Length: 160
Image (cartoon, rainbow, N blue to C red):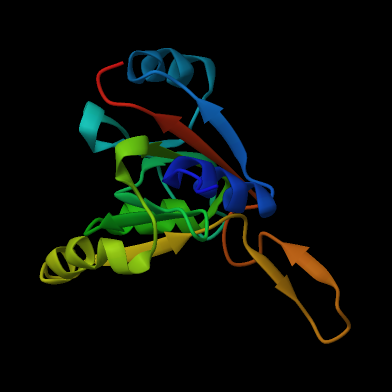
């Protein structure tokens, strides 16, 4: 039985302990009011909040993904904005909004999107699958060293 791209995305994203929230597009504003984010970058809804990001990072950020890759449960975030780059790397908790119509089967399927974005000067593309994890030779796992400690993915459909 073939699974849909959304079902596959959820399967693989869950494997790295991501939390998933299903919201209608019309519910996102209410969610933002209930959940205090230091940094907001959701271009499709024209929702932005800036903050100071220093070497200590920030507690939370919510950003919009350009695409999702179902075979790995990965969110693809693209930007020319350095603040967005810092926010996705230096926050304790990262929340990503992913429209379900932007979930592709595999990396090859998003190649045209990547090629178009790489033509822009100083463009940044991040493939974010989950919380940052690293281990040393003694097999001690540390979470959050090179990125977020926790990750949530809000899945939504356009116009709902």
